[in-house]
Amino acid sequence: MPIPFLAGFQISLGLIMAIGAQNAFVLRQGLRREHVLAVCLFCAASDAVLIAAGVAGMGTLADRVPAAGAVLRWGGVAFLLWYGARAFRAAWAGGETLQAARGGGEPLTRVIATLALLTWLNPHVWLDTVVLIGSIASQYSGGSVGFAAGAATASFVFFLSLGFGARLLAPLFARPRAWQVLDGVVGIIMWTIAARLAIG
Image 1 (cartoon, rainbow, N blue to C red):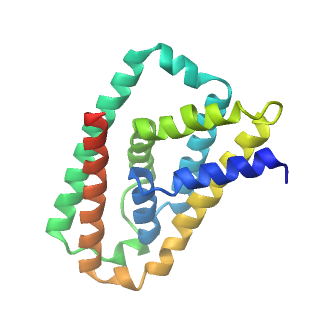
Image 2 (cartoon, rainbow, N blue to C red):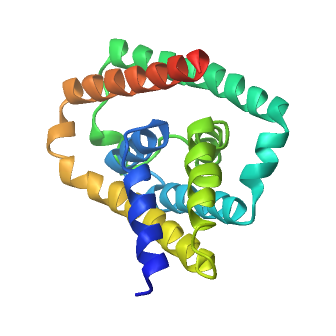
């Protein structure tokens, strides 16, 4: 494989693997076995669009419009606080098991709408894909397209592995207590990211 492709793949994989709001949501859907393919493809396709925007030079445009960054930042804080509170409430209530995976659950439209907010209102996603990956890709003169292709491929590999690999944890999450712990951890992740965004 060309060097830019491998470099893009490695850098993107390293950035995506950090535990965040998106990953926690994909893991939860994978455990419930609800709309897993659609969720994984949405995350990866969103990353691919943002990576392409970064390689096309959108990162410099974002620097020139600071108001857009402020709106994105505080919108992300508000949504992450709400979603974290929702996770803490689920952890407190308890009683959930993997039985929901056999059918029912949230409709696809609601799942994708929530995921879209977690993805597109998260400044960390923009910084990692548009700004960071975009700026690194510019260093590969003549190879930026290959770099972007590698970065996007890493996103597809990671999210599909996370979503469909989550079922290996099914025996553990057959117990309601495990769901309470997961929801508690998700709440902590959401509020931690919100605090970091608010502090700047």
